[in-house]
Length: 226
Ligand code: DX5
Ligand code: ZN
Image 1 (cartoon, rainbow, N blue to C red):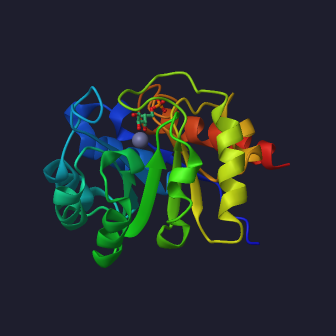
Image 2 (image 1 turned 90 degrees about the vertical axis):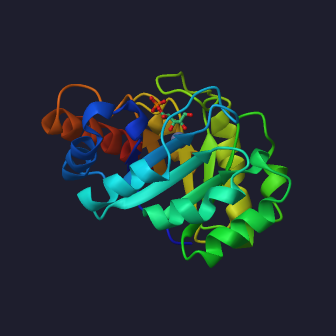
């Protein structure tokens, strides 16, 4: 079974919204291969962030993978708009609607990487019938809506169970929420390879700080693999 590379996906929710384009460019120049875009609608989650037009305006700043996390319900009516805005991967919540398989088929038909995500309380059994329809599984390690929350330790068991469920499938296993140098090692040991980090990356001022923060996370993740 191939071991997928460790990836740090900074969440721009923690960036300075008054200069979002520069913040995206800086974090990629600081070593991030993915940029995590937290879309929030104030309905599925108790917060509002940004929509497709903001993502479209960020697209020209980098060729990095735009990892779009839709915390919206319903999601289906907006999938095409996020695809056209430049998302490379689109991840929907299993809890966002009644027809998850149809949402995943739609993302596939739009030519994007297909992701599914589960809130902390949602059991993995909800996705056991769509494993062959996704490229990425995102395990929420906080209740979605805000950055800066504490990692829920019980989610390491869920990550381990998700990894077992994935088997040999080439599915990226991503974790989102409360990822720091102190929590990333156990999540890596449990089997995750992609790590969303907002407050742990967008800390300090500018590209030098971001580079240190990303390097610290990567080192701690690799230690978790040893
Ligand atoms: C929460 C978002 C997370 C969050 C991560 O709803 O999905 O991506 O921004 O922020 P930190 O890394 O600060 O927990
Ligand atoms: Zn997210």
